[in-house]
Length: 373
Ligand code: V47
Ligand code: SF4
Image (cartoon, rainbow, N blue to C red; front, side):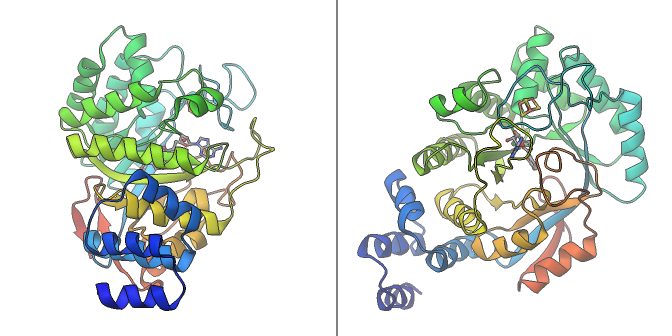
C-alpha cells in the first residue's frame, strides 16, 4: 500500500512534508504536534480523506456504529455563563425548565418500551441540585427503565454536583457508579488552552479539573467520551494542543471510547457574530482528528448538530460512529440553530446512511458491544 499511495500523492503534487506524514500514517506511526498542525494547514480534503480512511479501516474495518438512545435534559438552569451557550437560562427566566426525578424517570420508562438501549443524561448546572439528587435520579431511571444503560453527566456537572455536596470527585463518581452510571459523555471539554477557555467559559471546571475527573472515572472503571468545541475563536494550534492532551491521557488510562468534534453553532448566543465553519472545514477537522488521535477507538459525528447529510459525508473522513436515534429528546443544538430542529432518526434511516456510503451498519450498546450487524 505504501508504494502505491506515495506515488499517487507524488503524481498529484503533494509536498514532501505531507508525503512524510502519509508514510508515517501508513506505517501506523504516531504523528507529532507540528505534523498535526501541518495537516490542518496544508492537507487537501482528498489527501486527508485517504489518510483518515487508512486509520479508520485499521481500527474499525468497514463498520459504522449507531445505537438506539434518547437524551434526558433535567434542566437548562445553569450557574455558569459560557459565552457560546444558547441553552442556559436563569431560574425563573422565560424558557427555563427543571424536570423532577419522577418526570425524568417516566420519560425513560416511556421510551424504554420502544427498545432503546441507552439514556444519555446531560443538562445545566442547577444551583440547588447536588450529587445526592443525581444519585437518586440514576436509581429511579434504573428502576423504571431496567436494562437500559445510563451514560450521564459531563465532567462540568460532576465537578459542580460533588462540590455542592462537599464531596470529593472519587467518592462522588463511586456513588454514581453504584447507582447505575456506566459511562460518561464527553461534554464540557470545549478547548483546553487556558487563555481561550477563560474567554469562552470562564466559570466552569477548568482544563485540569476536566482531565482529572476523566482520569478518575477511568481508574474507577467508568469509560468516557471526549469532545472538542471548534469553530469559535481558537486557532489550529489550539485544536492540536487539545487533542494532544487527550491523547496523553488516553495513553495513561485507555478509558476514552470516542472523540466527538462539536461544531460551534452561533444562533442566539454571545458569539453570534462569529461565522460558522464551512462543511469543508468540518470534514477536514474529522479527518485530522482521526489521524492524530491514534489511540481513541471511535470518532463520532453527532448528526443532530451537523445534520444527517454532512454526517453521512463524514464517513469518508474517518468517522465510524453516528450516535443514535435520539427521538427528539435534545434541545442543546436546536436552540443553537441546528437545521435538525426536532432530531429523530429511525434505525432504518441510520442504516441507509451507512450502507449508502459503502460501510457496514452495526448496532452497538453504550460500551460498544455489538448488538446486531
Ligand atoms: O459541552 C453547547 C456543546 C456540549 C454549543 O459524549 C455547543 O456521546 C456548539 O457534549 N455550539 C454538550 N456546541 C453536548 C455533548 C455531547 C453531545 C453528543 C454526544 C456526546 C457524547 C456529548 O455541547 C457542551 C458544549 O461543548 N455546546 N453550546 C453551541 N452553541
Ligand atoms: Fe451551563 Fe453547559 Fe451552557 Fe455552559 S454550556 S452555560 S455549563 S449549560
